[in-house]
Image (cartoon, rainbow, N blue to C red; front, side, top):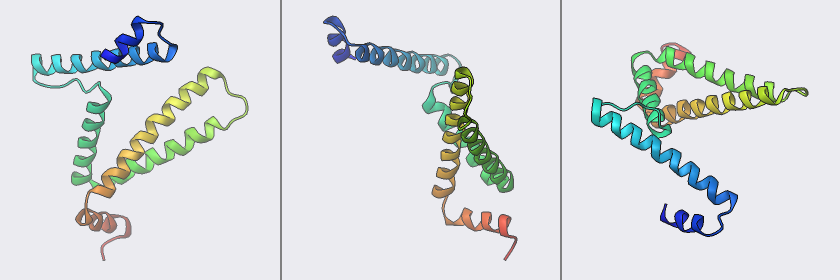
Length: 138
């Protein structure tokens, strides 16, 4: 922050200004989360790091409680990624629609990455249970 402040004092570039604005937004989100935790004892989960942590916990719980539902959610998310990719390949797209579809694609790709990460880091024990669900009992 101090480095950016010095740059902003003497002929800042557009990139420097954009960096400062992004940093300010992230800081405001952090302070909002901390204030909520201080006042109410729980986070808002609006900051991207906390939101992903919250999603990871809920998906991990879903995997433990109902692996079949977890796999269904995984499949739906994978289908959404494929759908939005095909939408973006259309020849005639309104710029607003393109931006909306790009945003949705990014959101679903992040979720798919989270699903994949949970599956790969969950351990061999859970993999056996998932195999029984998808392939039937051995």
